Image (cartoon, rainbow, N blue to C red; front, side, top):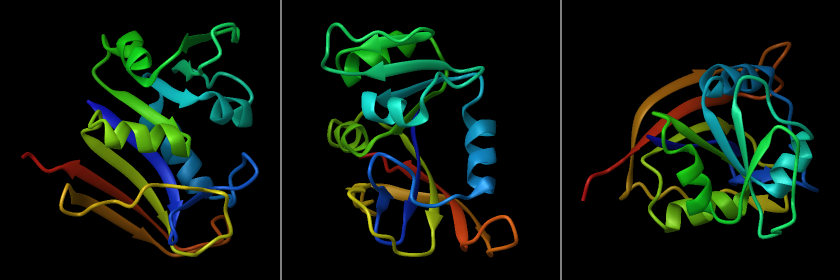
Length: 164
């Protein structure tokens, strides 16, 4: 199963200046729990914003640069090549960025969306593609109010691809 995992704002904002816009410890903890033990696919900019391979996950970086190398990571020159590198795994997670999300959805490579919806609009320079509810069906939702650790209301929402 190939799943996109992302945290997006009310206005579909993902990030600004190659960084996250908000800090939600609950989302980071959930991301770690969901992706640990599985391959994570990401674009080079996303990897560089993280800065290192994440522990207990196979990190696959997608870049057009044929010379690119990072210790402890696999390198792919296309999204399809990255998926091939991970295909012996039951669950594969695409973790960003915006370009990779858009390509994965447009090429119909994803079966599930695992979205943290942050219930606030933010100024951003990268955005998540619009989730078309004619294609995606919400299958699970957990809503949370802001608290002392998490400054914004948020929801964990799962979407499943609707079979044609």
